[in-house]
Length: 330
Image 1: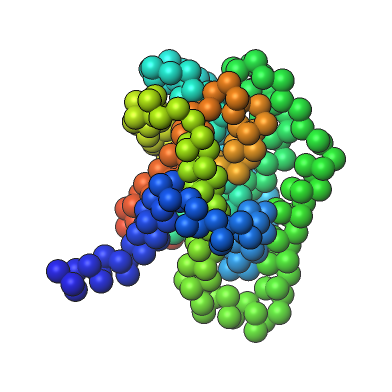
Image 2: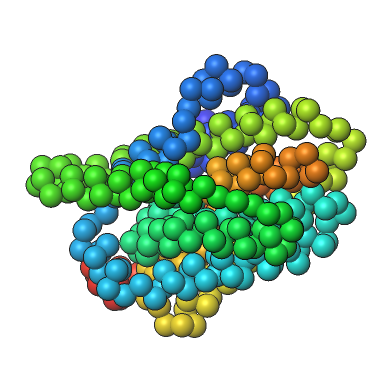
C-alpha cells in the first residue's frame, strides 16, 4: 500500500496538493492568510507564462501566427458557444446564484497559463493555446462586457487603458522575455534539458493562484447564510463540471471535424474550455456579490474542476497523441 501511494503521489502530486490546498482554503482560510496575503496573482501568472515561453520552441510559435485558424476557432467556442450554454444550464439550478456564477465564469477570458501548461502535458500544440489566450484576453474588454450585459443586465465597465497596460505586463512581456532567453544557446539547452522540471514549477505557481482564490471564497462563504449552501454547493459542482466537459469535448470533436491536426485539437479543447478565475472573482466582487452572494461557488468549482479533470484527461490524450513538427502538421 505504501509503495502504491508513493507511486500515485509521484504521478499525481499536483492533484493531491490541489485537493488538500483548496480544502484547507475553503474550510479553514485563517490558517492560510499569513501566506496568501502576500501572494500577488498577477506576479504568479507572469512567472508561470515566462517559464512556459522559455521552454516553447520559437519556430512553433511563429508557425502558429502564420496559420491561426485553430486558435480563432477556440476563441469562437470560448466566447461564443460557452456563454450561451452556461446561461441555458443555469435554468436547471434551483437558485439564480448558480446561473449567474456560470454566466460569469463563461464570459471571462481563457486562463493565462494553465491552458498552455495542460496542452503541453497532453502533448498538444502549446503555441495554439498561447495564441488563444492572447485572443480571448485582448478581446475581453468588449466581449466580456457584452455577454454580461446581455445575459445578466449588469452594466460592466472596464478601464480600457489600465487593462491594456495590465495585459501587456502580465501576458506579452513574460512571453517575450521567455522567447528572448532562448536566443542564448546555453539558456535554450537548459530549458530543453529541464523542461519537465520547469513545467512542474509553473504548475506550482498555478496552484498558488488557486489556493489564494480559495481563501477568498472561504472568507466570503463564512459571511453568508449557510441554510442555502448545501444545495447550491452540489448544483454548482455538477453544472460547473458539466459545462467544462461539454466545451472541452465539443472543442476536441469539432476540431477533428474541421481537419485540424491532433496537436491543435488538444490545444483547442483545453484553451476553449479553461477560464480564468481571477477576472471572474473581480467582476463578482464588484457587480454581483451583494445581490448573488453564492454566485462565487460556480467560479471556484469550475476552476478547481478544470484543473483536476484536465490533469487526468491530459494523461489519456498523451497516450493517443501523435508527434507533429514545427509547422504543426502530423
